Length: 263
Ligand SMILES: [Zn+2]
Image (cartoon, rainbow, N blue to C red; front, side, top):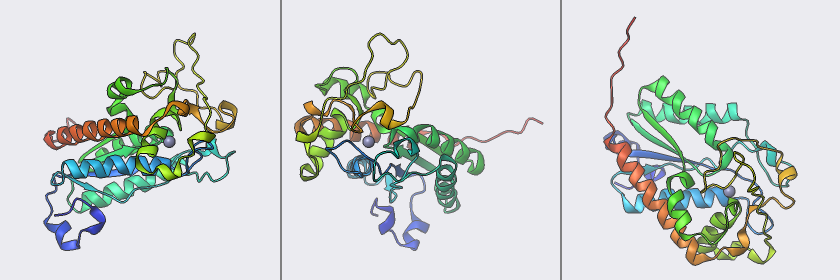
């Protein structure tokens, strides 16, 4: 049976192994510097999800992605389509409720856009409460951060938004859409700060201030895409696929537990 959810027939869904992990990628449509397209988060998130499906075709179903996310702070840059977090939570939890209705009991909300992280965390928690199934949320760079650091060329601060990590992977996947010659180093890391750090692979996020993006970056980039190359991008992507596959296998092994009302 194909791991591609959209290609299943209703009879296949009825007969499917409901302990396969259903992967829903949630991304964004937004500026990624002068060098990368609006669909960056969707292209990368689906490359990870489809890579997992190749590694573990009998263990997952990959849903069509949600290509929009929580990013109103980006709207000073033309092209951004933003979704309110309440809308996104409601949309995602309608999808997870639908999956639960059909009998699926293991879902992975695979995030590929930074500001969706807290939104999908809440959506996953609400799914568990409402449907009593397993629903996990994860941002894919967090799953492979150690391995990103093994391969990266950039300094701390170089991997954030449209920086080395995303640029290298997009160059590996669809080089014709990356204009790396237009990119500039926008490493905004402040080494004297103990808590503010936006580097995705070096412990960013301990304390969060998400400014208006046009305050934070002149061209929409955060990080250093100038050192990106497709060979490193292939390594980043492989690491993301392998670590996400490992997470999928852990999710498949999780016990389904029973509530107990202690009133
Ligand atoms: Zn991105």
